[in-house]
Structure formats: structure tokens, C-alpha cells
Length: 185
Image (tube, rainbow, N blue to C red; front, side):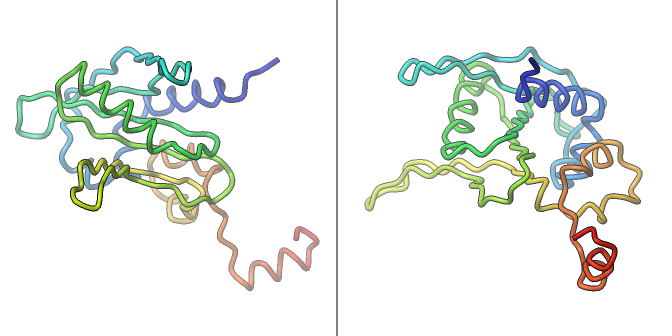
């Protein structure tokens, strides 16, 4: 029997590993402008154990690179999520903190949501009290179902084209009428 989650993770990792620069360019253009793609190394996956919950988590993708014009190394962490998880922002922070503890380098955290339903996803984790904001952790998000495939269909970007099937199919009233007339809706 096929494990859909592992299969999804494997394909996602292969896609991003093959088209890392194109992926960043298509969906995170502000990050793309600053990364040095002549220095890209894919790091070994990290496995973290949550002693309290008894869960084992594996970071999906880690990339070591540099910022343009700088010698210092940074890490790009990309986490793919194929199903909704209530406290996903908590997991992103735990991964971030453990990665920072190990590498002691700046980390660009990115979460990619590829499930079929549109959900409100957080892009941060706050820990605060009425008297002090202790922590604000922010990360990039890409919810593929919120992207309109028409924006990417004519762009020569292999990563975006490979992910078209996970993007939303925005249907205009006229197109919906035509689809309904022909029995597709």
C-alpha cells in the first residue's frame, strides 16, 4: 500500500531540489532578489523528537546558501504541508529554533500548503503577555490553492508549471455558464 504523505513529501522534495531557484523566483520574489544561487547546497534532513508529545518530525528541505555580496552562510528551510494541521505554526517555530540552535545562522523559513481546501493559515507565532511581547516568529507561506493557475501558465518557470494542478481554478461567470451548459458543472 502507498503512503500518500510520504509520496507527497518525496515528490515535493524532488521538485524543489531540482528547481530550487525557479521555485523561489516564482513564489518568493523578494527572497529571490537577495539569494546567491551560485552557492546552493542541500543539507541532510534533520529529525527532531518531541519528548513531551512523543512525536518524531523530519524537516522537509534545508538549503545552505548566501546572500548576494555577503560571505556569511544562511539556511533556507522549506516545509511542505499536504494536510491541515491546527498548530502548524507551533511546529514551524520548533523546527526554526532547533535549526538555529544547530547551525547558528540566519534562517529563511517557508511553509508550502498544498492541500485542496482553502483554510486560513497563520504565518507567525506570538508569545506575549499583557505586560510584554516576548516573541514574534514570522515565516513565509505559500498556499497553492490561493494561487490562480492562469497567472503561471504562460511563464517559463518549471517549478510553477509543475505545481499548477494544486492551484485554484478561478472560473469567471461566463466560463462557468459555458461549463454548466456543457454539463461540466
